[in-house]
Image (cartoon, rainbow, N blue to C red):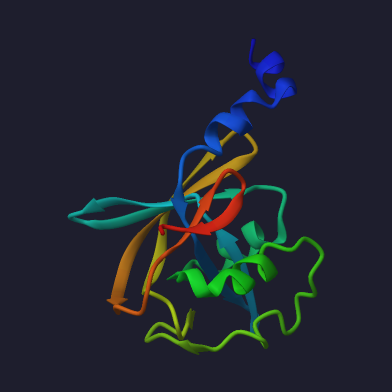
Length: 163
């Protein structure tokens, strides 16, 4: 049954009806900044402060995230649609991928986007293989938030807003 479900695309279509927030996740390895747009990110626990991120195993970002151990999350505003689109483009150059995005380094050295609704600095504590993805659980070391507009939402396989 699962092969039939996968082939039909029904699961992808059903899950596209779940509106999610959009984030940019960053990691730095050997002096190079890596970034990825992600919507499979959520809070797990307030005590201890834990979040999770799902990352496809066969990607360079998964390798960077694993090697870095510490990573940043920037929760995007609806105005950040171009940033989300750029950082989800397959084949974009690794070098300078954040050159067109205003950013700074957090206290732990991770890259955080300047205009984000909220930012988190995280440290990986667990990884769980789940199909073709890895569920990465992290402790939140620092969290900041600002009231800078409306969130960017991913719904029906496209970026939209809550309006």
